[in-house]
Image (cartoon, rainbow, N blue to C red; front, top):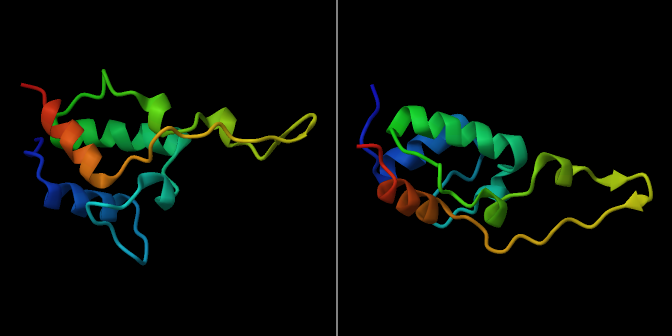
Amino acid sequence: MSQVVSLEKLILFLEKEHPYDFGFNSQTKLRACNIDGVDAVDLFEKLMDEFAVTFENFDYHQYFLEEKELAQFNWFGFKKDREIEEELTVQMLFDYMQANQCR
């Protein structure tokens, strides 16, 4: 059974799924917690199940690197990562989730 999303429940969920010494708060940037690439996709799948939200219209490319972009180098040497347009914070994720709850 999915639960209603609240900022507090989201933070508790993130702390359970990605335990770090510093903890999460509304301004925590997800990529700063090593949530990127396939880890971000896995997190979104778990959030969909836990909170009955959809990420169908979420602009993944704006906030996260693709798994292939996370490689440190290519055949020609070190590669430069694509610049992320904006870092996704817990508050931004919560706001998105509230606006995209499944009815």
